Image (cartoon, rainbow, N blue to C red; front, side, top):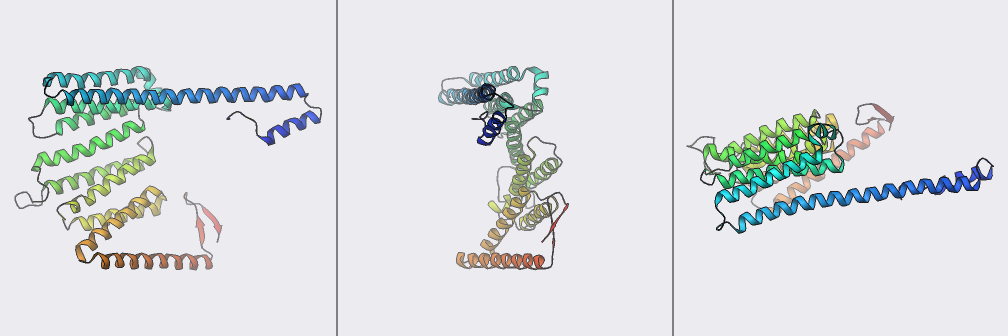
Length: 347
């Protein structure tokens, strides 16, 4: 229990009783008061968890119910009615979120510490982005592109995130932004991935990759400057988008230009780790290097066995070289530095 006294605290308290500083009744009253406060905090915490689960479950059930209604009655409900269902859900999510957040002033105050209520509000705003995009998608079936739908979702997600910066909104913005990039490339040059567009570099696959790289660079730079809520998660999202853009052409058309780009992304992330000591950058750089080696060997070597042996040997050489370097640095009395760059103890 959060408010229970430890054995050491109890012993110290009763040492005061033995020394005559406190009476037995005073010590017992102190223990009971602390434990009562702990029970009250535990009870409040349990209620908060239940309220949060109920909020998430209620929002999820409303969303699923609306989607089932629209899809299950596709042939029965007219298109305006199906659009109306999604628009109604969007309004409900937005209004309930604003009400729970306490209006404009309450949302601004809650932005500093969202808490349980803030997380539910941010989730409702993120779901509003989904339903708004779905409404536009249902209402514009003849456009031949989902760009209006995902664009609407991105705008609503951004508005929700700006109203209350929290993790659900951050995830909604990232997903919608990637979808917008994807649909923009398809709209520009058509849905074909592998063939070049009129014999040029501008295929939909390449445009998607370049746009994802640009988005990843901007997102990662903003995350490194701490301009997002949950900076570590924001940085991870930026790194994922970067790696997705660098690897995208290798997933279908095997464009050779993607290899140096993927190598540059991996090296940049590893260089960023060397500068900032952020494990997200390290993991991203290692994933980029593994993708580069794996894709490169699959193209250069016909035998899977030979490719695997090359990877194992290369890994062993790097590991052994690193171990030797660390041992020599230790014998030479290298200076250890912490993540902030301050000098540590001599090894």
